Length: 202
Image 1 (tube, one colour):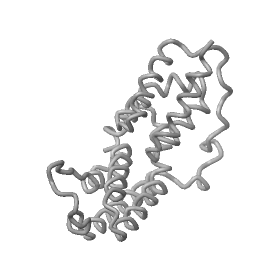
Image 2 (cartoon, helix red, strand yellow):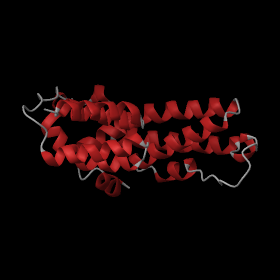
Image 3 (tube, helix red, strand yellow):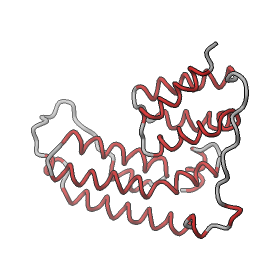
Image 4 (cartoon, helix red, strand yellow):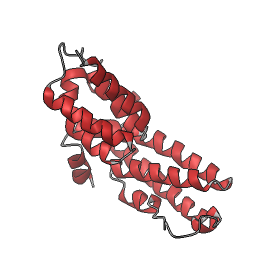
């Protein structure tokens, strides 16, 4: 659903395209880790990788993949159930097929970087703006940091909302945070936010 996905990026097609370009590699790495930890019976890691894949699929608008990766845990249920019973290998195979389908669709709608015309190749990020952070941006970054600190998926929407402002003030920082959030790397993203907030202190 391109329209709905673009809406999550506040109409910023460049940001959406960047996410789609990074999705295949990031999601494939998570899926491989998911298969490995499932084989070793590491329940906690399996659930973590499923959650990461669910988040990546949600960002990219891959609804079927997100539905397959979504896993609700019952807090009252026993945690000693073998992971192969709680999450059968057949489900991971389904996830792999869904991931293949998403990647094929991305390859269809997004040309490989080598095939892009020169005008479409990303240029160097503009220089950082001089001066303190605008008050609105500072407040938005502080709110984003709170979400990142708890690894909340709400950080994705919060960053999308402030991305335009941050691009104008510090495009390299915006790109660095975007790259971190593309793989749900909340801690590195928070470090970049902290750097921005610390630089703004008198």
